Length: 336
Image (cartoon, rainbow, N blue to C red; front, side, top):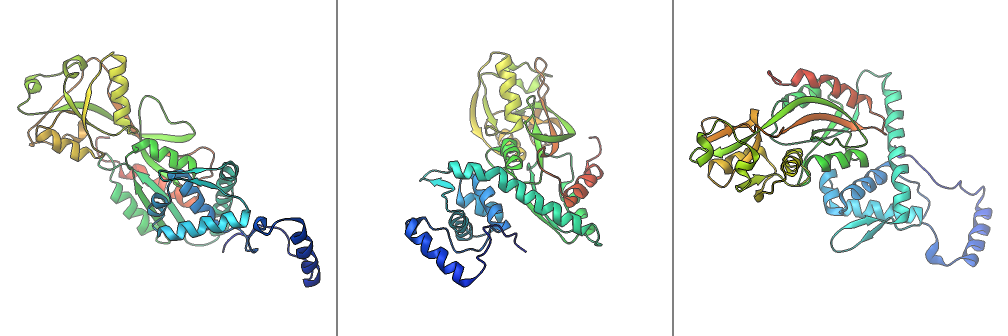
């Protein structure tokens, strides 16, 4: 049931007619608001998604709906409010001043709606609602499929909406939490934590340098960063915790390096190393065995990041999300 907002209805048809006539004489027709229909929660959800993605296309993909549905929802919201919420150009979509003013109110409204549902559902036998989850791909250390499968079996009425990190990695997941388009995220945290998040560390991920078996460094037992500064690196895009930790380590050592290729998956990076396309820093637990790759620890700089589970500090955590968080530790893999 959508939540309705808006001015009170006229007390009578005659009064409505008189008001309409006065309004028509006082202002241009183009400035009239839309037909009264009230704001819908889904419109606000779509608004937050477009604001976070800065794209109608990406917002639609995140919400698993067609783009026309997002465009129609935003157009209806703008008509209802009598204001343009987004500036649109060929490259991206940005919030107007009116959109910036609506943003925190939209988050608060959706949080209040979730809280209202939780308050009622506590008297029922089953949890319900939706959890929007963000995660990294190919990290290891947690049986993520097992976690979601077990949760779904225990709470079948809860809809799970999953989004894996894209080109902006953990930084993008953190922004989505802050914007309210994710409820919980499993993300990497490097030396500099993300502001505005409640996080709990699940596991530490020390990094090692992976080199092809035939590489001149493969016979070494360890390396210093200066030994590999001239190598061609396979790394992750800016925004990934691994990339941030590595960049900061090289900056601390006052060294520069060359990024030859960027990939967003640990397994792909390892595969490229195995085929001699470069070297890469990988989580030590994720270096494949028997694939022609040698793993070398780094001795002069701490190279590690941590996998955390995170929620937004300024948003209420729903009952369904809390139930999911309570199950996480059961699915950490042995040795973590």
